[in-house]
Image 1 (tube, helix red, strand yellow):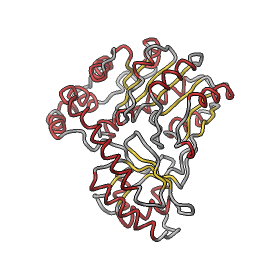
Image 2 (tube, rainbow, N blue to C red):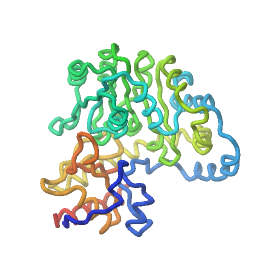
Image 3 (cartoon, rainbow, N blue to C red):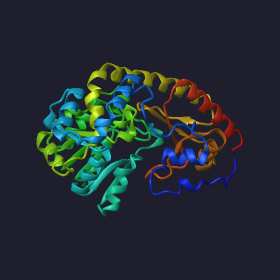
Image 4 (cartoon, helix red, strand yellow):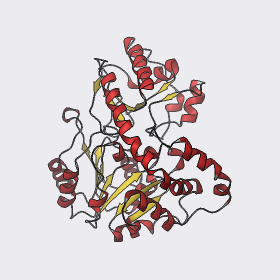
Length: 366
């Protein structure tokens, strides 16, 4: 494998270049994307057709107000609208929570980059609880509580399932954790990938605690990242405080239209997640055929793999893109991450077969 095949598009302060930049670099529109974790079984064609049919009005008129979006998500998740905060992507809530958080902060790593980068950007004291390979990247309640005490953290953030590891804490462990951390100013559970897991959401659990909030990206589950839609669930008083920090019209018309029309596609939406889980099992088996890879367990719609010692993740990523038109996520720019780790999005079986063949090819020359 060549060591000097650097690609300038990856020299970015963002976690990755856009798919549009990737396509231009690979000089092909059929780049197979194993980086962006979107649901491959949603939206159905009928929903796409409805969105397209209403696009003229969606673009012409002002979107609905926040209470309408709250009601639409309320019908989707079965919780009161007063406990829901709707956002222009989950990063909007993450930003406001970080700005208002009491320090020191503590979060698990590796994790979604905004949880580590924003506090550092704002000069806020933050500590990291490392997920370890030898434990399959899983954390225990005891580990978390001990780290909270030793760092004297006032705000704790946990991604569940973890991004990029796919490790997931049980509902019972989350319930215990919320009880143990009731003295903190804020506990945030980032459940952006919980729909793909067998573990239930903690949305109902946090309603019992006035210092806890679940946040979630909807783009992953809906298969539409470009829509920019996320939400949070919290005790009424906390939800009101967070909503007060958000812009008046923070949800664009297209996202609002999707929320309205989604009400008629609940069955297809729920049915998509078991299909992803089945593809994940198949993908884990196929990746396991490559004896030099370490394949970690996952409950998300991606799988973390570790490359053989001495293999450059960046060079492998670039080779996959240039030689096979396959785009993968290497994790060296995550706190607690490593160039040896790749996060591979779960895709349908023919795509997985193509990925495995490509990996075997590039690893053979490593």
